[in-house]
Length: 198
Image 1 (cartoon, rainbow, N blue to C red):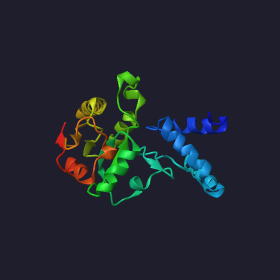
Image 2 (cartoon, rainbow, N blue to C red):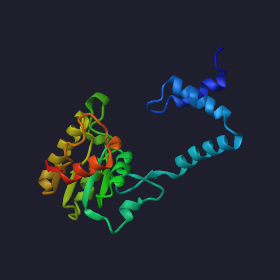
Image 3 (tube, one colour):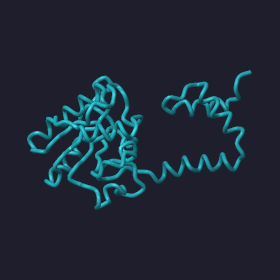
Image 4 (cartoon, one colour):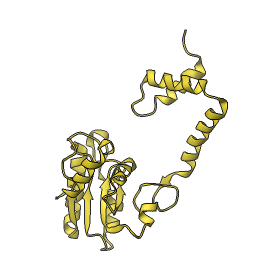
């Protein structure tokens, strides 16, 4: 017997999530059906709440509930060192390390000609604008160690050279082709400690 149309629509919605195929989406849909109504309503409320309340920090581009995120607001952080990452989830990964006391800049992507993403499609201009005030001494490129991440790191390092800003790249303790968000704390800590100048 085929699924009812309303169940099929829910399955299709779950399939829009990354890494969720039909079978997993089907399990999620059936789980929702089996939930108590109050739990299902709470689940739906949390989805709407996160859409209503979460925005991007005006300074770094990280997730925030305010105009400026808690990391950028924190005066105990070293604002002269900016760690450049691809996505907000990479900030979460580095924050788990607890060794880094600088601030971040989230690009929201990498240069990728195959995906029609050029330098103007990610937050490079905003990074350069942050650096122009003269307070930044080092930019750490912490994009993923894949083709797009490397290309983005090299492109940004060339833009920073005339500004006389030290530009470093995290060490390659992270395997080529892997994502930073999945790296363990020790690997990330060593990658930061052993960063090299670009």
